[in-house]
Image (spheres, rainbow over the protein chains, first blue to last red):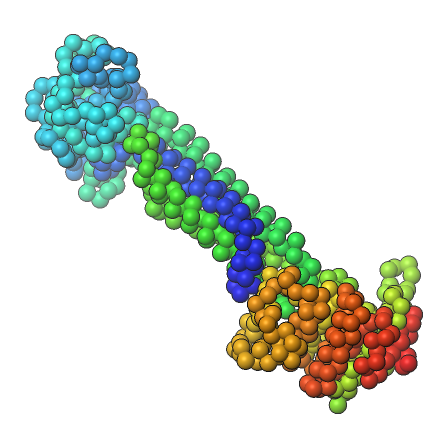
Length: 363
Length: 222
């Protein structure tokens, strides 16, 4: 560390530039991770909120909840610790006093029953209690400025709905969720599919004591039980998003590490004559190698932590509409990954140090 | 006491087609407190000779003893450790590390052999070489003469038994060159080192106890 630190101190500009590059690259990696995670979460927070074990969908829906519909009385065929009926449909809402296209918002309606376990906690206002009342995701307040008792018109429907409460972390397929009772849900859904006599729902959300699907019994050929993780993975577009971002982040980590490795390698090559003289004096390759590794560690640590700080600050300053979210487990793992991979790159330089022939350096 | 001793040492370079005898069979020794210089034209084998003594290459035949130890027979890693301990190098372009101050050049030695850095030792050594006011300067801030004096300080600092100087005056003007060689001779006596200086400048040999001439791989006393 003695040599490593002294050299950084001597060539301040050069090392500041290298650290600058490390900062920018790690900033990019961290920020993209936050965005990817935030976006992924917006697909699934409302599902995570159920804390469910599994979900029962119509057999022919191919895990697509939008294509799943069956009569509510099929609930009798499902045996689990907790069951909850769920109707899902997407729609477009707009404040009644507004008319322009910009003020329209895509939402997902969840038709639920207030006695069942997936009923959300209301953080502002109260629970729905009658026709055409909804509990809305708080993002509608934060991003669209909706307030309690606001009246909303729905696409393709004459009647309006009223926001009576807000809940948090309720996004489904990147759109805010509006919770309402089954009766209202039937109306909204009917506007798209036509009125039916039976009460139609999309899914039965189930919870079992042991957290295992084996505790759930299903006695119907028309229904199919899926684990909640499988359901999430098969949300439309979810897997493609996660894989795309995952690959991008993975490559970025590799590129960042290679950049650091190449910088250190070039620095080592540049001073190979000095290192040769040092070896001629009997200073061991081990000592010099340790100093190269130490220097890499200092540069990466400093660069990556600065990048991390910048990311956290950016996260605070970003407007709510940007789907950015911190996941400290991811941030910490990426920090460690960047440092470890950069150190691996530094080992190439150490190999160069070992190969330097002191005889050439002094003759 | 003989600090450097070479017994029947030869060095042959074999590139597959032709054998070149860079050093013909040589017996040679330097006592403690002795200042030896080796002169000769370039390409005569002076540097080969010095690097064999310094353990940077091994002799084809024969043995090199440093401070009574079979230096040339040691494994490479052990030889490097021994070199660090027993030999001080002074090179043509100076052996200083550009990003360390004069003080740090010396402190590096403490860091490597895990001894305590004693500022008083450093001050008295630098004072002897009259560069004590340059302690916090980088090599690039020093003049050629000052740089070689700092290099001598670095070579002496870890108290080796042998000093090897390869053209230490090559980049200096005549006055500075004489000054540096004089310091080298004085320190050799005072600290009881065995010092070998390779040079092509015959005038500098007046401070030396023994002068050898190297010609076509043959070493002879002048």
